[in-house]
Length: 86
Image (cartoon, rainbow, N blue to C red; front, top):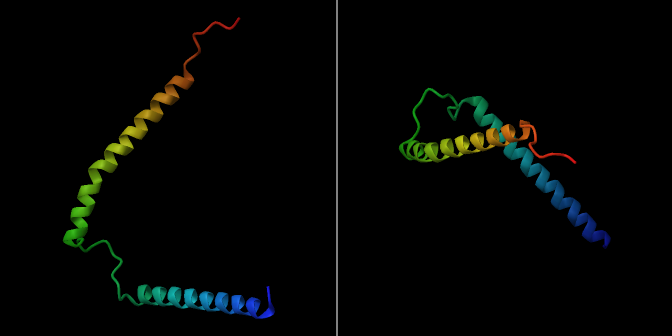
């Protein structure tokens, strides 16, 4: 790699780091100033509410399926082996 290429890479990395710092600072400033309400006392938008409702049943049934499957595996692992060891 040439010296110019290395300097260019360093410049790009510095610019990226500065951009990330500016974005994070701006986001923290917006949250701290209260421009965006983060409280849970306001209802969701209609589209958000429909999405949450649509996802709640499949997610709940998946969690139940995984839980029951894990419980079966644990019960099987705890059972004493019925095979004779010769």
